[in-house]
Length: 574
Image (cartoon, rainbow, N blue to C red; front, side, top):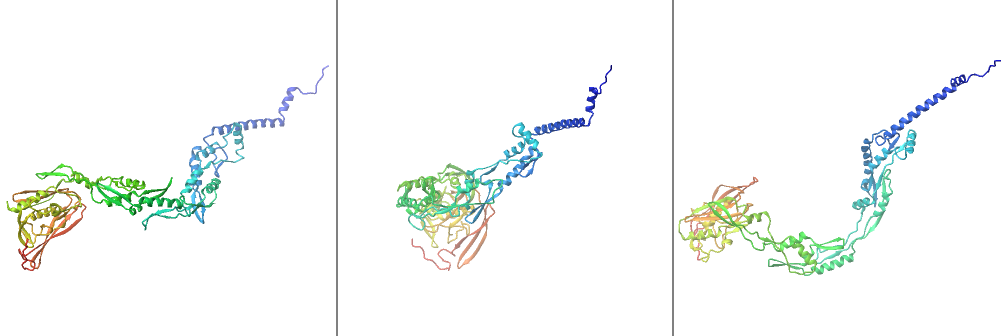
């Protein structure tokens, strides 16, 4: 008997199951899950790959969303933030006054590099699971980057110490002074008031750089002087005793006294590491020493020259004179006085080393003829002996810039012992015989050489009787004690006077460095009673374009023995 079953075959049941609506949903869910998983995996892999190069999603820095910003672009953004924070000023209120200071000067520092790293590390730091969790939460939770900054109290204290506004009434130290008195006296110190810097630095340390206050209160404390009046008085007493008798200083055999007043007026008292310290104003003390010894000291040797055929040759260099004092002389005096010495303190001279003096000694500026004049005379007269004797004495004279040469002082009285003879001379308008007669021709020749060299004349006088061997109105005479010829070297270069002569002429040559162009402009002749007044103009043109016009004068009697009224004058008796 064949039996039939009401149950469906197994394969039919399976087909039927998968063909139901519920099975479709399951399959879709699985597909979606697989896709989501693939999407998550792709996003996570992209997030991991971007670590260190691109800012993660939903990251905020200083109020700005920086999601997706390349790491290389962060530096300008962070630098701008640092500048903004550190340039903000805080107001320090001091005794009803305000001092505004940028936070960047008060020890605050913004760590730009670490902050940049914090931005780049956002959602990328920690263990892998932590990073994944932060990434998953990214779209839902905003990440605020931590900004890194610091405060250095030592920098703050150093800056605050330099701000004058934080010392409304600084302490006044006692002062030692001798002004207006002959002794050293103490001016008492005064207690001041200043900001308590420790308190202020502690207040700054509590400030949040990212949200600073606009103002910070300060506390004032008393500031006593560092030195007490008693300590200052002890030093004043010591210094008064040390300087009471002054001190004797000596140089090259010459001694001078530096008085108590001299020394006390140049004392300096300062607050140092060891308290009050006494010293001397070295510049002022050096000037005092120079004023005590204003003249050159030691040996002065002029250079020796020879002139042949108009060419100057240096035979022996000169030795510059010495002056007071060497660079360490003032220090030696200061140490001697403060060490209790009453002297004499021996000072060391120094050679005058200024360029003018050195050039004077070396002869380096004697390079060319700058002025020369010749006058003639009959041969073999007694007066020629005197003219040539003057030339021998003056030959080789060397004049510094700014220095004057008095012919009377340099040559001295004309005596027989000095090599002079009796010859004709003019005295009080009369021709007489006297020892040294005729030397005025040498003086006139020198006068004209100096005239064309551009020198000045501190003193000169023409003959009272005109002699045709001299330039009319441009000549000079000499006598004992007056008149004198005094030349002044205003050219800026040393002048060498060289003389030469023949039996019938005398020549004076001046050698130097050409400095001024000289031109005679003309003469004006007028009457002064019976006398003749002659004015001769000279124009000097200097290298800088400056032009100076001056005038030399001469006055001539109408004849020997007559004055300007035409009346006879007494003949000299000696």
